[in-house]
Image 1: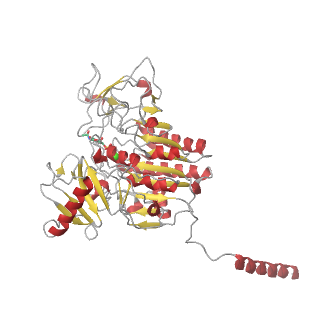
Image 2 (image 1 turned 60 degrees about the horizontal axis):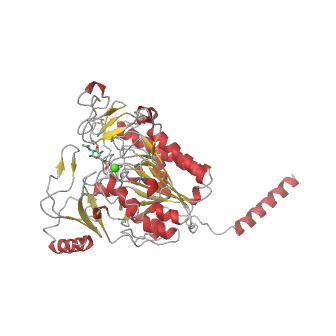
Image 3 (image 1 turned 120 degrees about the horizontal axis):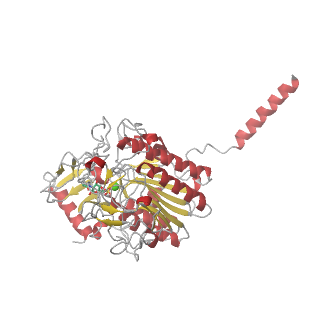
Amino acid sequence: NSKHSLLLLASILLLGLSCKDKPTEKTNEVDAPSKNPNIVVIYLDDLGYGDISSYGGTGLQTPNIDALATEGIKFTNGYASSATCTPSRYALLTGMYPWRNKDAKILPGTAPLLISTEQQTLPKMLKKQGYQTAIVGKWHLGLGSGIINWNERVSPGPNEVGFEESYILAATQDRVPTVYIENGNVVGLDPKDPISVDYKNNFKGEPTAITNPEMVKMKWHHGHNNSIVNGIPRIGFMKGGDSAKWSDIDIADTFLDKAQTYVKEHKDKPFFLYYAMNQPHVPRTPNPRFVGKSGMGPRGDVILEADWCIGEFMKTLEEEGILDNTLVIFSSDNGPVLNDGYYDDAVEKLGNHDPNGGLRGGKYSLFEAGTRIPLITYWKGKIQPAESNAIVCQMDLLASLADLVGTKDNTTDSQDLMDVFLGKSKTGRDNLIIEATSRTALRSGDWLMIPPYKGVNYEEEVGIEVGSFPEFYLYNLKDDVAQQNNLATSNPKKLAEMIHEFETLKGK
Ligand code: NG6
Ligand code: CA
């Protein structure tokens, strides 16, 4: 027994000693960021500010995205440059305001490459600094330089603007060609069944949603009545390429698998992976594992599917031992839309869920819900969890990441906000020009000014106010984030300042 008490005494002593040796609690401290972490951009498609629980979403539980938000920096004034896909992706990858390029609009699947092969891009910049670079997922920035022959290598494309490896869908899930393209080549193509694509005319004898409605399994609401693939009518006409057509319900798993494989095969040297997921864009085709899981219909189900994929992807980073050496940036290309052209119960089954998170407008809109999106930076052990209300735009990643990896970019509209993205500063942009369907508006400080535009404000088909009025609109977002009080007439001085700033920035 005395032996026992001796042991006890010894352990108490040891404990005391080790306590003394221990440095004071360090819970709030993080290590200095290393220079060449892996960089992953996880980019969703049409995910709204209020779609995830950590941003106040009530109808859906998104634990994996929430983990990034609560253990990283959750930006509450994070912006896509635009309220639609192509221009936002253009800004993300080139660091340029998309309104400088008149062709930066929603592109058909046959559009030529929107980014010049001479242009600065995020992957090019990183590649120059020794990074391996890849894109997996949705491209939607055009391919080729004229008429595309889908049966040969399609170029220029992602591989010609900085991505060493690419596994993409060309445009959107609702646009033809409905095939994957790997490093320029259509995956699984049978040369005896060549692909033809046309956005104007159908191919003789090919069924469409109009000629053969009995073949349609997902009913179209507006647009989306051309070629039918897997029972889903699409935008554009396509003939041939049967063996290459993707299975819609497997797209999420396919991209996840490609992203995970890329990580496993490239973890020994720094890499940049642009993981561009297609949820919750239409057509919403959850894998059967997720059907019915949200109670909100396919739109909710694919958000849960995306969240699951992100969880699996993060597990891979951890299992491969590179989680604390990987900066993960999560965001969405534009705000939410419920009915974007198919009857899929998104409106009917919404319940109390508010994809807008209290913001006005939605996809296509100059109101806040169009461009203000969830934006999270996560870096285990290097970023201290916080919420930041700094104004930041996805366009700023180019100059910011350049800074992180030890170079500079001052040739673009991108601003170096690396300290903001790492949580060391809360001073973001002074101003930002946002864009929606080729119209622009100015955010400056707490203020938002929408100039007059022709056209209707409320777009019936999608059920969204897009922000087109015959007069100026001015909001103080600090007091009125929901944009209910137009101050244009009551505050003419501020309005004049905003107009002046807007015109100066746009170079008018
Ligand atoms: C619109 C489509 C919409 C969606 C959008 C692009 C119609 C009527 N609507 O033209 O369904 O595909 O383009 O979305 O065709 S984005 O997120 O890629 O910008
Ligand atoms: Ca989109």
